[in-house]
Amino acid sequence: MYPLNNIIILAFMAIFATQACAQGSEPDFEQQRKQMVSQQLRSRDITDSRVLDAMNRVPRHLFVPVRMRGYSYQDSALPIDYGQTISQPYIVALMSQLLTIGPGDKVLEIGTGSGYQAAVLAEMGADVFTIEIVPGLGTQAERLLKSLGYDSVKVKIGDGYLGWPENAPFEAIIVTCAPTEIPEPLEVQLAEGGRMVIPVGESGFQQLLLLEKKEGRIRRQKTIDVRFVPMVDNEGNTY
Ligand code: SAH
Image 1 (cartoon, rainbow, N blue to C red):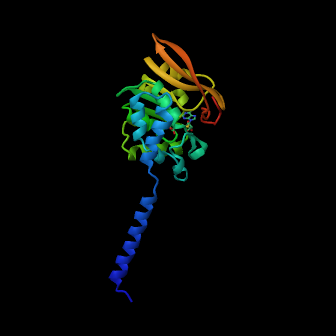
Image 2: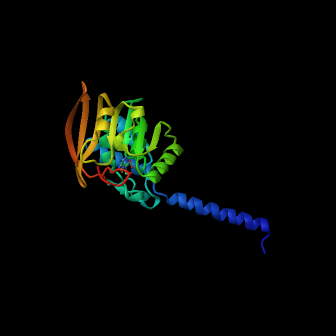
Image 3: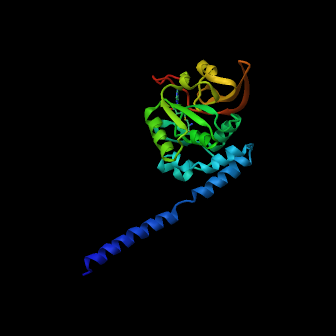
């Protein structure tokens, strides 16, 4: 018979050993993140060092469901909760680069989803206002962003088609769900000299457009073909 003290010590040692083992076998996410930046972003056309630095810092694996963590740094979009998706890292980087934002810029995001894109913009120094229509996703993202210290991100649950007039105008607007037409309220809420990136088109086939407001007029430019989830209203109808 062991004295009780020894049993307690042995139990603690066993727990400690299991934890150490689990930590030792955890994938090296930092290394994977560095590789993602060099192989998927730098090697393509992502040249803005603020985008590259931000994506090197944001722990993408914490924004995907636990069962998907092992795939966090792969070159693809991934499913998140409520049937939505977190965009491919390259698309997050490209959209962030197209916005050409600087520290202190007010940026509106439509489609908070996991909160990952918002975190990247916050790392670039932006004041981020992000709107999510699925309450469960919005509150989950808000909690995660707060726990990671992204205090410059404000999350609102609602229909992003309408924008966030109380905080307009925005130097940049990023839309991460796809309407078939550009929502007029968003054009109105874009600041003079501001930029908007938005996927526009039917479900599954959209073009990523870059809009610029100059002297009150909107100039559009097509970039690449993309696939985003549709922008929907509160009844689930697509815009
Ligand atoms: N930017 C996200 C990915 C967004 S997926 C990220 O980094 O993870 C697209 C999101 O847009 C989904 O969460 C979807 O619920 C949301 N969405 C769709 N229509 C919307 C609307 N009208 N207003 C706000 N969010 C909307």
